[in-house]
Amino acid sequence: MAIGSAAPRSTPPAIRGGRPAFPEGLPLVRPSVPPTAGVLRDVARILEGGVLTNGPYVRALEDRCAEYLGVRNCVAVSSCTSGLILVLRAFGLAGDVVVPSFTFAATVHAVSWNGLHPTFADVHGTRLTLSADAVERAIGVRTSAILATHLYGAPCDVEGLVEVAARHGVPLFFDAAHAFGSRHGDAFVGAFGEAEVFSLSPTKVLVACEGGLVTTNDDALAERCRIGRDYGHAGDYDCRFVGLNARMSEVHAAIALRSLDTLEDRISRRNELAWLYRDGLRAIPGIALPEVMDGDRSTYKDFTILVDPDAFGRDATWLAGALAAEGIETRRYYSPPVHRMRAYKRKGSANGGLPATELAASRVLTLPMWADMTHDHVVGVVEAMDRLHRYAADRGVLGDAG
Image 1 (spheres, rainbow, N blue to C red):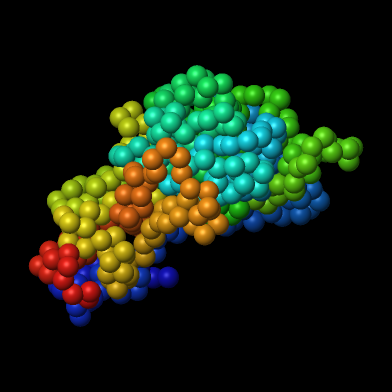
Image 2 (cartoon, helix red, strand yellow):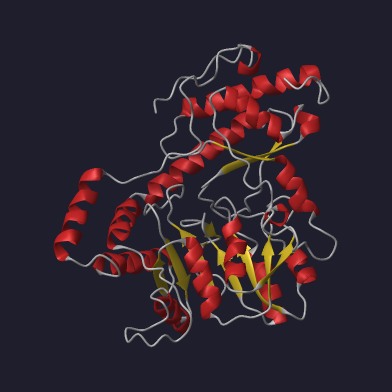
């Protein structure tokens, strides 16, 4: 899809007859695929060699990613979801798992698929990642684990969660779907807790088309995950436990290896774009950003804002529709939060509800972010939002619906 140039700031918004900022559309994301020629050479070698899964490309990906992340073990799997299911199954858990509700549903699905019971805990009010204090309140006698999410590419409060997990003697896992290349202080995300699980799907910064990685410093857990991704047997068809088919194909591993070659360039570019957004948005009333802690590095898998309807003039739902009229694609990650989804509405929350989650879900909006975006793209989005704020402020929050 061709991408149009931004409309001038002085024009009225598209919802009132102005020229759209991006007449040919600005997508939310564009996959960062590696150069075709190299991938095709790899695919030819794979097909000629006849080993299509769990072969040398998978092993090379595991070795390179383990080295990059500074972790002892990396296990390639078919998806982040299957990886999350595997680590919980391999650990032999029973009972309840404390999870955030402000996350992608797959985090909680992995708990439920294992016959475990999700206990929703609230997020930190400014970081939007799982709150250690809320986890402390949510832990009960049936709690067998904590599963936290590094959100939008920004690391969790690792130390706080590790402290709570240690105090209660429960294992801690991380859904790191957004966070391959994120750093907490000087350490890459990947070696925290008992295990972390990454996604390599098309919207991520490291891409395999589809796939995931389980990383851990626990050798025994890694071996159980390797067995578990092959139905639970170790090559003799005598299943040690109930596993699943979660193997990564050689073709997906080859694409991921090529993607890994330029990963740091993409992360640097996404951080540059995030700072351009920040600089432009700071002058617009009612727009806030989730906090990335000092010393941490986010991959900015997503660039997400929070819209205060009183200060901006309208709410996030209205802004999403108005930006769509400008040709700007957005998503509301994560609204509804998981505990409000029909699949989980009977689960509820613990200890006084989830006020920070509810507030974030009512205000959240994710703007376009991909490595090949230009300065003009960001300027165009910011200028469109500025026009929409001025339009909304002129009419007031309770004005007409248009």
